[in-house]
Image 1 (tube, rainbow, N blue to C red):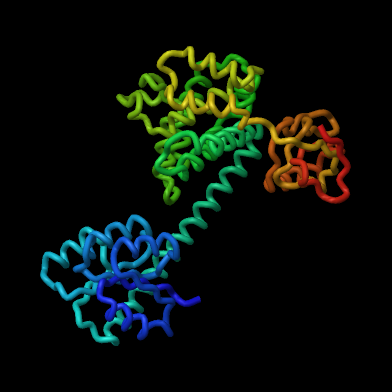
Image 2: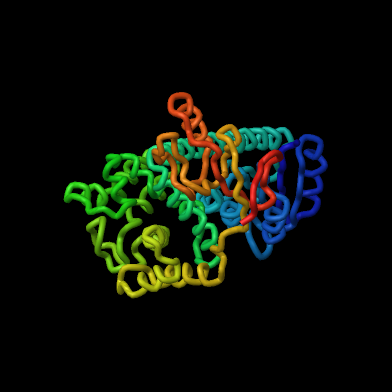
Length: 395
């Protein structure tokens, strides 16, 4: 597919000439002004290169390119104008972040070279993004697989928090949800550093020693340090650092932040973590939330209200599912354990309710070579997702 170029100029003869000259090389679109061009970017983008005139009615080239940068940050922006004064060039660079600046009349061969350089720059930008995203996704997946194997119960809590975040995003006003979702996934990663005995106590509500209490208190800092050096996770590490900070400013970390100065995503995670802790003690979600609301100053009231709304609306209801009996070889990522998974001696490996991942399956296959697992394994799958040959009873 040809690289897409957008030419913006209020002189129809200019855009017609540019389109006629470059349409065989590129997928060319034109617009007579900034407002029209922004709509085209929204409807037909992304464009590799955006070329704009300076002097246009209603919105000049600098204003348009500044708006285009927010709408399509990866598009490379050029300015082609008859107004070649120094201030225009300075504004174009500083406000419109233009890659190159050209004056009219611009010979076709010069514009051809300009477009080729801009397209190369666009390819570098997108290649870097794809590399970073691939690195990021791979790093996050590795960390989640580690958590699922080292602390399966904690991983189950993490999955529940992720699911609640998905339901909350439509009811809480956020500038973006990307960092919140990543922070939800990685919020418990520091648990892999806990001694197994301490981790087990957290799930059986046993009394922790003073040293263990200190370990638990500092988990957000440990989590922050674990992920701070992963590209693009700087903001996520800050969210995790403040995820147990109380709305009134008390708690960890011991600093001056309180109320809405605490990252909004951290305030959301605080509510969701404590809600899951109460549920693990056997409380219904509504009862737990009422108890949390009575803790004056602990939680962001706006977040509590939003979570109440999700719970009371039934958006957190369990999807109708089917319990099926399968062998280990039939276990698939996404299956939910309907009963405890144990070995032949009765040792618990993964508790009921745990979501199966590829890493868990690999671990179980290796484990099965040494110590046999008790089969069949009971799992819960969404209705309509059953594979052929699986036997089950609807619940």
